[in-house]
Image 1: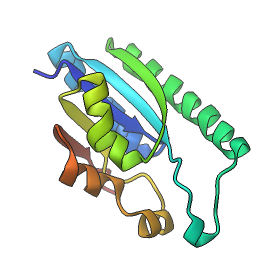
Image 2 (image 1 turned 180 degrees about the horizontal axis):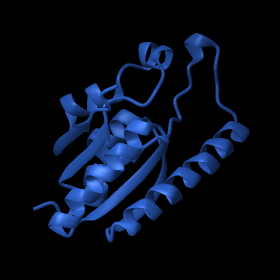
Image 3 (image 1 turned 60 degrees about the vertical axis):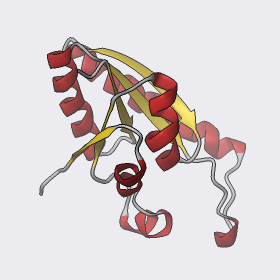
Length: 144
């Protein structure tokens, strides 16, 4: 049913739960997880912020660390996983570009992963993906 499942992660508890839920589905349907970490390449000129190469290198290092951890968790459950570090606008990458690029039929992602200030400035990535995705989306909530 789901040959490939896209799981965007950011290291948050919600994204870890998304990997776990996606792995359960992948095991059931013999799917491959496509686990991605996305670093934003947006420049927030109106806020006086631009990201230099050192910041992007730091994003990539952290992204690759969380990808490695997520892949190890999936593999412990006997699930095939690919990992990819991507630079771009996260919500657009998740909703439109990555599903097409990797041929996925389902996105499994956490309800939220960023702090409140970032969400206020950037908007909710999850809400955008639900509204604009080209494939089915499963949102994992972390009830407190």
